[in-house]
Length: 299
Image (cartoon, rainbow, N blue to C red; front, side):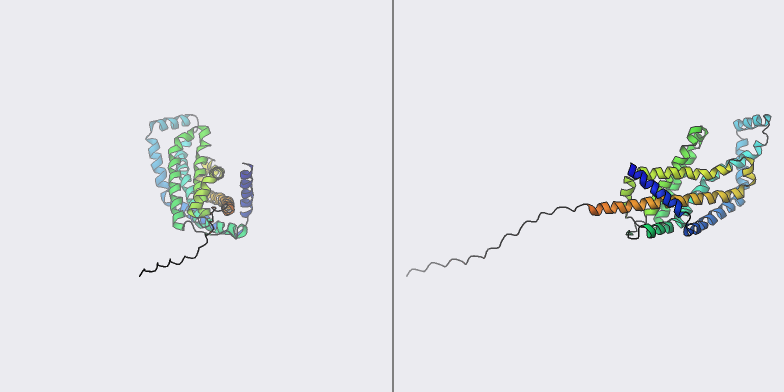
């Protein structure tokens, strides 16, 4: 246990130091530009229809209408105008987060893993256990499962303790599955990857949960009420930027830990003695005896 915590801490401080590397900073710009541009474009074309649809749905619910009338009687009549936009933002944040994760996994992870490998593990053999399209399919599959779990768990977010536990756990599971697969895709064979994920499941899942809590931090900038609606375009870009930084750090953390674990796993396999083969000494080959002479014929 102490050895595992030491490996986690070692990989963590190395990941934090690598975040300041000029190559990592440059790599983070492309996912930021793509995710921010796509988010702004979607907001430009679909913001008003989405808000109108949510507002009409809320007005059709008698319970929500009673709640809004009660808030108006308490002096919070302005809450009616911002409730629908805030709900649209809350529902869009998981999509923005998944988009940032997938872009970082596709555009940054291979270069980040190559940087870590060439600086720390130059002699680690690359076995190409998965192609880029397999990583993309794996990321999309895991992301779909995480989004489904998030939407199904939303009713439980009304319980104060669960809202602090469920989303980070779901994002932690997603980070653990996606980042571990991606950082080992080039260097580990499929069998090595499965063995490593099984042997280090708890540390990797713990790293995923921690990064899940870090991934929930950018959403806090939307907790300013009416101002979030006014400055939504700027806040979308800021949120994507923060998500990109969090996922870049997460990729570095998983890369340092997983590649070190892979090197140790191969070293342990090489140190194991091979099967003992019993050598049986060869028996000496005796020369063949000459055939006995035939008895003489009697006259």
